[in-house]
Image (tube, helix red, strand yellow):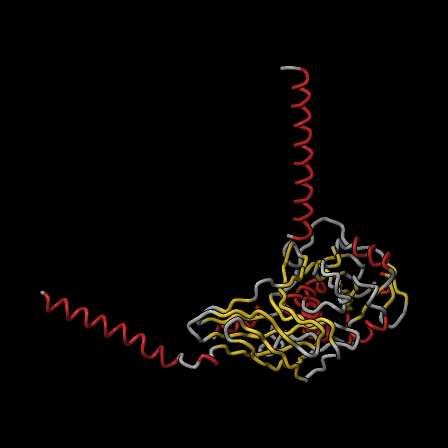
Length: 174
Length: 204
């Protein structure tokens, strides 16, 4: 009886340890747990003083983090914004308290949802140029990114001419 | 029942009825305009005559566009997200129409005439499509046409910036060659859907 119990406890301990070990090894590098992908913006004219940057933040770590701010030399003021649809009216509001990126998940800043707002552009955003930005995270600190400037009416780097909904349909078909 | 109580009850009923009527009116308004499915317009009259200035500085009225299907979007050049998305979709819908696009004129009417002068629009509209026409006017002219199209717009709260933003209705309207609104597309309607709706009206 005791023998069986000890065996079970041992087996359980082995299972637990096997779960913990690789986790410790894989996630030891704290600096690389947030991956910023597909940073992009849209071309502006010389008179437009506002721009938006969209991107994907992937958290491959075991702890959640939060995007709490943005710095961009190209604009006088940068902030995190959220679009609100209300009966066909689109409102844009500052996000208070940052954007949470949960452990092992991805947050996408995309048109009509969330974006980094650049206010008071010091120069126009030229197609094919790059905008340097610094994202500030609560735990991971500062991460530098380069956002590519796409055409004014672009929907992003991954839909070249395919709308978001169509894109989803294509994804499902695959 | 005392007389005063009776008057009180009658008064309460009248107030409740008035609120109900107001609520109903709001709901109907909401339903027909904002809750209509894509490409559908209820019996509410939308649209009408206007006098505005295009991005080349020419004075235009609704009659200048009679004879063509017209896509109308209300926006502004400082709009960082919604307007570029909607205008990009309109541009793509025009391309999607291919040879049928000859009979379609895309219009962007600014709701921010203070900043969006014809010269500003002239730099802005070709970024999306070489056929896109930008229209502006006086504050009064813009208010008038926005009212006709039931477009809501207001300056957003943050007034400490000179770069103010606008809350606004983000529909795209389709006008037939007689200038009547025949379709309404909600924000996010795919360019393919807009193009196929226009084709259906063309085949009529």
